[in-house]
Image (cartoon, rainbow, N blue to C red; front, top):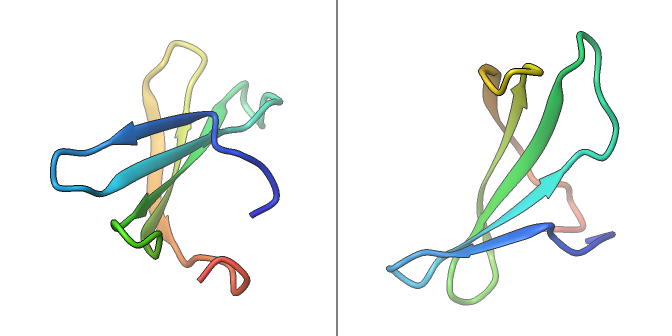
Length: 71
């Protein structure tokens, strides 16, 4: 992966969430982040993309496929 996650959440079952927050504002003054869920061995289980409005409400959320070099 190209950079370290901004936030790491350790979940009770041993998995962890790595949250990468986009540094620049997107179209419509939105902020986006990517959430990767990894198992205990470090394998990626799922990747989600979320976009929020300026006031913090969720604009959209969808699952994406991990890049080839991350899998």
